[in-house]
Length: 107
Length: 121
Image 1 (spheres, chains in turn purple, blue):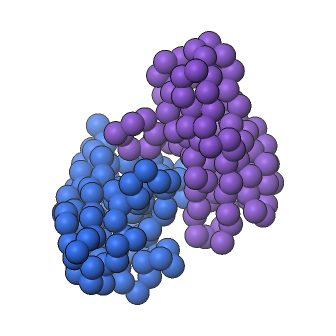
Image 2 (cartoon, one colour):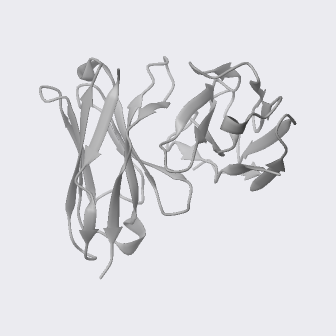
């Protein structure tokens, strides 16, 4: 199975600053990489897929990049509603696997 | 509005069984593959099982294979997960998640609010 590794585990960022989250796959997943956002007490929401295509409802301050084994999610200017846990997920090979998550917290 | 509402969770002893349900509304249920994803307390997400639109294709994570059965009733717009021989490590919030509909991609969107399964003696 493909192992997804996210870093850092926790990212402390001030509102208005940039956040950069990383996700690494143990083998190539091409561009078959998604990101989810999960706020406390809520279910996850699909944020991005195809490595860089934003899902409905997410603003342009969220951007994704990468292919193969290295991926990045960037939030250009953090807003209060962006503080959450972010998970990457590969859908290149069964079984579908998630990273362990990066918590973006207020500095 | 798309809605997924899970039910059936609860406290069960190791070795016991539970049947989770997910009631879907707001979309044509029979047109979408469906999934179960779980999240242990304070932990990350783990895909559990998937079922295709007509139940022709079914997949399980190794962690539940042989102990769980995913099924659906398109006439009742409902998804199910029968879990047997439950273990302490099965303790988690179980989410029902629809396939996003993006072609050639297994993406989970949207999700229900989840139902908590606690396995403890």
